[in-house]
Length: 188
Length: 426
Image 1 (cartoon, rainbow over the protein chains, first blue to last red):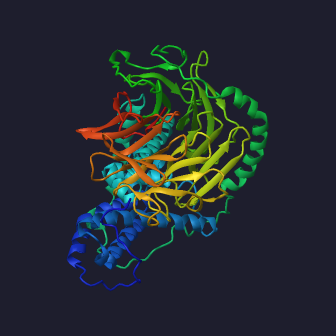
Image 2: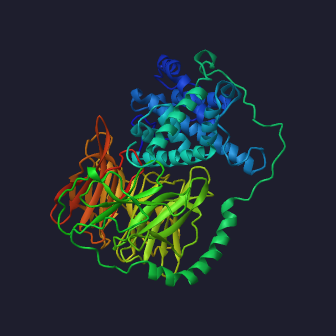
Image 3: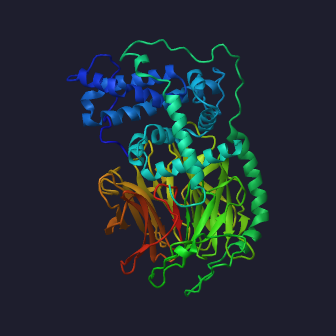
């Protein structure tokens, strides 16, 4: 399933020059309105603020370069969400590859925890337990949970972002909640 | 979320999850983020820590062990399997209830709310469902009665049901189970009404080194098909379809690199073909297809015939679903007809196509919209379809479709939630 606003066609050459007719004000407006939410989403997926901001910046850069190929500018936010999720996957894949090659001390499992010193200072024990349990879930389950319970998207919107069916979204969420229930129940 | 004994726990988890996400997300404040396109310096995390040696991928160790175990299990398990599974045992007839015939199985709650609906003659007397957050229980329904007849627990505490498939004997099902934090799937035959309690018999198949998402079995329980995602799959997932000859233990596999979203399996009665749905691959749009089980090993893209796709893959060789995403498929016992339903973003009713010989021979609309689930009874005469409707909140809709007459009967079923991981099968 592809969102209506998905970019189509081959990837353009890497350039910092905007394509013809790129409405810079529109992209700036999107950034002002949605950057914080997208960075927060990325933070929940990759676990650290610096990388989260990098991912979101890259997504806006991609939107900037590909604006002319965007079928419907009204769906730019949908494109950005998909781009952010894909960017987070790329980061995690790179981390995993680096670890497999012995270039990184990060273990493959669990994934880097969705936690930071700032968040740790603000949160209670319960929140830390929940996020630690989330960090042990498979990648797609983490994505579905973050999109559903942080971003507040419906299953149809999540399906569009992840490009899977709504059935897959609901079954993935169900598996994730079951795993969390068992994990957190065992800790109590 | 509704129905099922774990819903209170799931709701609590959902609330804790929202709160934890909020707290973590609030560490990012609008006044602290970079401006757009501001150059950044990326610092590799953990640079100062010591290097850790590479671990051997889990599957490289498990697979040889699994192969060795398979040989032992196949030799030792065939007689037990054949005695444990039915050989097309006759289905119970009449309306005599079986309530209470499975002591040890949790009785269904709230029988006082039971409502009964007339069902077409010849319809299968029972269907089962996995529903609820944790999938730790299997619900057995009598067709036409809203409340579950039985609630069957998982064989081992801490596990979940991953999938269930029905044989021709409504007393016997095949289930896939596993643990959330231990990748791998166990396959069992589940015998209801087999004595004092439901009995599980391990199938002569080694623990599968993957998480199974879908399951199918021929009516005579000679062949089994499954779909899942390899434990040692690189990020992005490697899905596969497996085919097991339960008499010999032989397993054939076809892979789908980069995709873990294969499901809605169904076997032809003689086990020569598997119907399936792929939600997304790098090669195909979402599609429903048929895979011959004698195909040599390879990728699903190489070996399967595409029947219905979201968009045309190869012009003239398959059908589309009017923009809907193929979501579920059911292969008729003769292996020639495929029923396909799709999730539509715009329509209120999921389309249901009957495809035979490369052409659409029937087209109808289901009562609700996606996601949809299909299950064809072993005789091929009745189709069970599950969709959902939104009227204030999402609710599941079950329909019984008599394929001979076209009669559609809505089925009541308490505890099946629209947003849950639902499996329904005869």
